[in-house]
Length: 109
Image 1 (cartoon, rainbow, N blue to C red):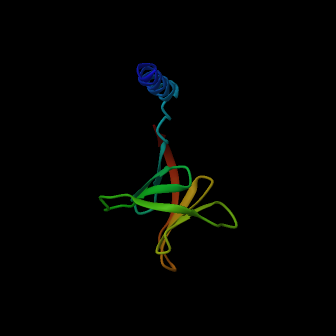
Image 2 (cartoon, helix red, strand yellow; image 1 turned 60 degrees about the vertical axis):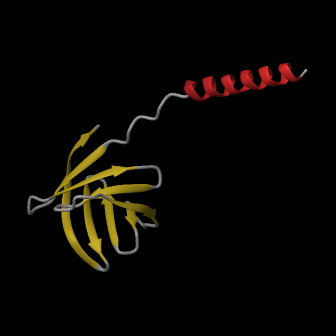
Image 3 (tube, rainbow, N blue to C red; image 1 turned 45 degrees about the vertical axis):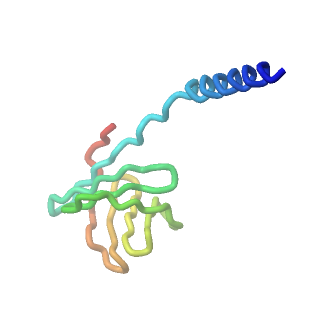
């Protein structure tokens, strides 16, 4: 009886592993590049409920959670805000717009 229990647990573990492997991996989210009038670029990767935003001259992306907006898509951590509507975007630090009039140029996979 004890041997059967161990064997049964082994088959359950194997079944769980096979089921986990059967789920296809999720494709990476596309990256969008917004070009601003001064020639700077803002790179954005939209995730489930957040956006990874890489600003000009920054080495590390800012992970900004989705925030409430009246129009467009807004992502903010309370200090830095990325706002996107259609093909345009701007960035705010606090209450000041620091990058504006950016337009989408291309989507990268």
